[in-house]
Image (cartoon, rainbow, N blue to C red):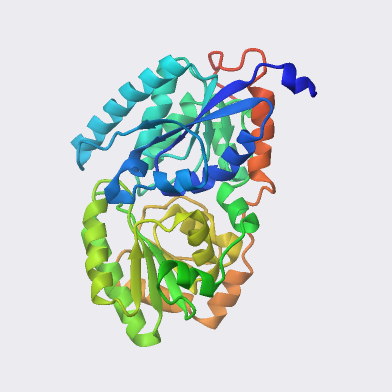
Length: 398
């Protein structure tokens, strides 16, 4: 029997609110379930529990992941006031859970408002926070300041590349608490078994053996842009490109940000009118999504996966608008405003052989090797350190 067997295991609460975030966390959860030192307690919330967003908790259940708690929070509608009400309600419900369950730490990923609220709740309950993917900048989304607030709450940081690690330290976090482990999305793309075009086509009931583009577009939640006008421009550009090149479209619907349901109605209407060349899905699940990314002629939209994960596959990508402004853009990414003519021009450029070759040569800055293994190894050490979770000191540099 190992020495770890005599050690009382630590409980780590892990929070997930969206399909994309769960797909990133899944390899970490799998390794935590095999850990002799840590017991994960998975808390499912947000869009996972809503029919309008695909009830994606079913994907977690199909994976056989044990769920410690389900905390529904999306009951206030959309808009600024509704988001504030959701954050307040989430803080209250998560604080109650943390105070009752008393986990030794809480692991959160990214920058969404429900994750921001869960991190605050953990802090109020005296539960140390561990944060994955701090240090990014996304000037076109309210997530930008949510993310930085979570950084200041967290005791342990796992940024996805060296530039973001340096930014976390410049924010006053001690270097000994900051670990550049690479990106979980990069690791998934490199290691996860993926479907071929025929398998994916059969799974979705839509022919993807011919060239197609993978599209995900979310509302910009900062800057005052009109998401519906942006989506209209994108759909018109997609129609024009199909007419000119015959490209087909696989669309994953928008998230639970304010305005997301409006965009999804537009997507459904457009896909219904173009059913021979387009199909839209609330969620593909992580395996089908990454398979589609690896097979696509191009990726388009404003999802973080378009700028963080596509460099690993070297797939041409069109990043639209300002939602991801501030993040590293690799040589496989073309940025353009949310204007029909400019989106169309960018999509056509992404299909040109010269750009396809350039994209294939991309080197991802997010390759940290065995990212999920490194995260779990560090957690197994740090959660047992004397003083872990003690009040932080602001790091002013040396």
